[in-house]
Length: 159
Image (cartoon, rainbow, N blue to C red):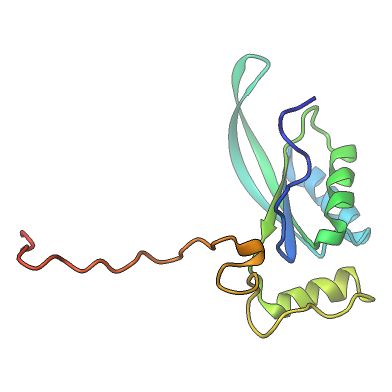
């Protein structure tokens, strides 16, 4: 049994991004098309990358493509399994990112494309954010700006 859990304990955002790599653009485009047509993702993006990694005891370099699949929490498990089942690599890398803030218009787009029967996103205007200043469950949100620290009286800034 792996010490790493498959299900994130604190995933709460309204959107997920699944990332994976493929050996070339042709394979990636076929998988993107298959998964988009299955309506497991609303959007997929392909980016060429250069990778270095350990494989069978040797440091290896490869030209690969990174694909990001944008989806909703309802379909993330099915998308993860579909990527894993059909992946050409012996040990595929698939990572899920829990997206906490998304413009309301993009959430509406996701719902329209992936789940038109679902109710509209339960959010006020603008980007999403957990309820209240401390978020759900009283957890304190991370600061996005450093606090202003006044200089002490009597200290001078050296040039």
